[in-house]
Length: 206
Image (cartoon, rainbow, N blue to C red; front, side, top):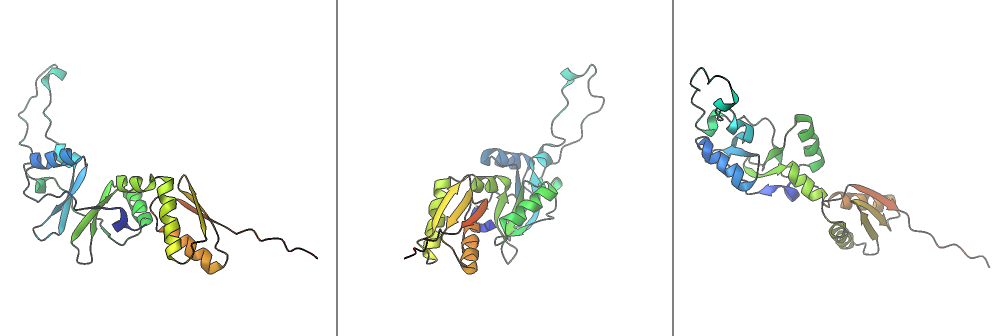
């Protein structure tokens, strides 16, 4: 799978001078936890997450304390630029999803900006995008892969999918097996590939 096949296109974004409250409303309305901060030219200059926007904005409740707060709280940050984080990791739209998942796991990231060859934002790929792809119905995966190998000139190859695991019967040569495995790896929802050798008919003795 490639990032461009599962990413969220036309992602929700904010500008540096977007008010924090407006940014919070966008996260709420779109049911997301973070979003890129972009310039007027469409270049990513940061990322802002829920925790960045809510930190230092909740007042202490005096009902939870014996004594009221001793000092007046500081004015909370007003704009996204005051709380956003710089972008340290971004991915290309043709990157492999398997590599992106490793990056997310290593850095504890929930989403990553996706850039084109001109470094312009074209999407966002998140853990939920990957989860959605992996949760595809087996029947849909089987149908897509069967159509793909047929287009590649092998309509006789049998494809069976169970829990994302593909068993393909038909490829016999090393070249065909490599083609079958490569085709399966491009289909969203495939988690494992096994190639079965077709049974050979016994030679009758006269």
